[in-house]
Length: 203
Image (tube, rainbow, N blue to C red; front, side, top):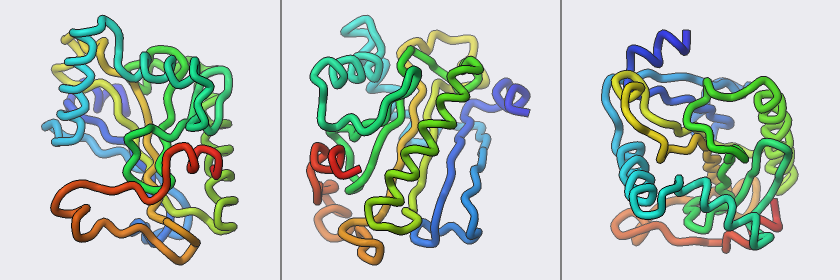
């Protein structure tokens, strides 16, 4: 099914919502895949940033970023295994936001080898357990994957893209205190409530 969709649509969005706090109406976690014939604003911005970085530096932005975080033994790194790394990006907006990156340059989900799929399942299980342990509750989140465009873009050069997932959990200080985007954050820009380094240590 994914191969058919990949050839037909320019945008495949895989995501999972967990918990009523993010609007999930089902009690159990469940993933979804939406296919679209246009590129939404966020993937377009990510495409532009990654393309610009690649044209200036000759390597993918997120590959370079991950190497720098690892080289600095960053406190923002939460989990690692042979094929994947979970970290708190320094630009994170949500209090406990994390990013999941492959340890090699992969552009799309269907490029994953079998051992990478197995270790992906393992690190996903571990990061969700870590989230649940922060406030001793089933931690709500929206998690989505971003990868290179599909459809007509399959015939284009997209080596600037790096597959990655982001977790956006809405909780702030406890299981009952969510983060709200309001006031200045709505009309100007989001503000950090907790430093990325503190979150990296907490998770």
